[in-house]
Image 1 (cartoon, rainbow, N blue to C red):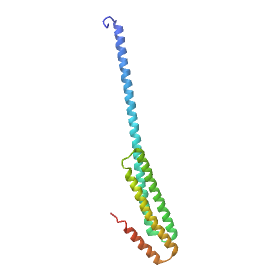
Image 2 (spheres, rainbow, N blue to C red; image 1 turned 30 degrees about the horizontal axis):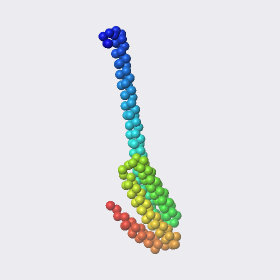
Image 3 (cartoon, rainbow, N blue to C red; image 1 turned 90 degrees about the vertical axis):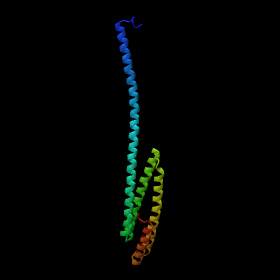
Image 4 (spheres, one colour; image 1 turned 45 degrees about the vertical axis):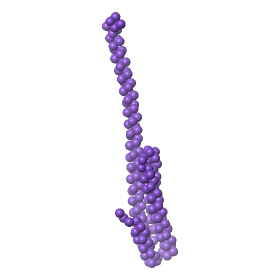
Length: 172
């Protein structure tokens, strides 16, 4: 069959086969390029969520440290009802912000099916338990200050309670 064809027909058939090969190769290349693009998009989305998670956890850490500083302010500077209210308000704000950041982190981890979700749930639970203790102590101080705001005996009593309370949490 090829021997009976003219050179022009043979070249036309060879050129057509070459062009068909180029089109097939281009189609397969475009398909592979689309798969790589999808993979890149997934990787970038995962990386973006990972960075967001790190920022949330870091923000929760900052809020917790600020909350501890506000607790220290309560211990050191809350020598009047107004000061106690001021530092209590700041303490509660930082506590709420720290918890919110942890909850945001947990939601993000759940969407990513992150294997360490239980650890964040445990941290949130421990934060709530710690805050319950802190708020109970603050409520006790508020009651004592309201009963006798000028008493030096009361101030000594509160200092003694502070020492006893802080001894429950040894520094590692």
